[in-house]
Image (cartoon, rainbow, N blue to C red; front, top):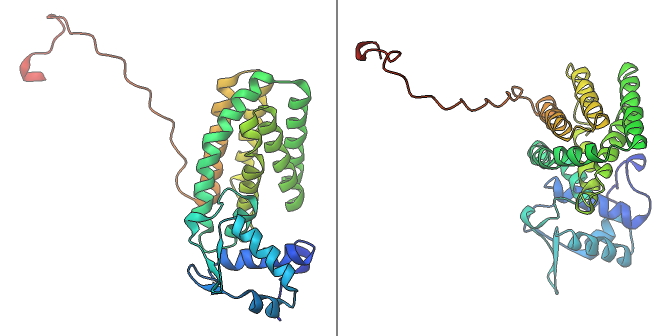
Length: 265
């Protein structure tokens, strides 16, 4: 019998557990693109019924990861067809060989969305929202002080959920689960949670809160962008992004008296 993995780290229910096991195997390349899997073989390997196998394969088909072929089994589809913004797919890829590639792609998504959400949220600036952000930040600080991994992840997730949902934007609301899955991809077990940059990250979070509390949309957007970029440096490495250089003012025409002679130009 093929193992579903650690019970404490996997979903409950045969269908959910089989879906999780197969999704991870596909994302990790154990079931490579183009290979054909047999529903009967899956049922035998995992000792589950045909109906459970059908449900799991149907879910994978909806996610774009497999394609059933009549009398030819089920084929693993290329990654370009997968629902890459689905939280389950993000979680599976976070443990796969292209985890860093995915994280870089998702950080780019965060860089595009979170500053815009912070800008809108700052315009709303409702007191309960600001209080919620302060409480989440306090939770992060306490968890960092005691190096409590679970509490830190919970508080950080709450912080970003409040900020995103505070924008009250219907489109952003459909990206909340994707962006929260991005946070959890960053918190994969294969990555160190607390680093030398964590304290600085908390300061970036505080700047976001202060700007939203001050109803300063542009400062909130700038603080959120700085936070995302700093996180990217923390988890992916590389030099911190430098601040953009402001454009030089247009040069005024030199007067004859101030113009340098040709020999000095």
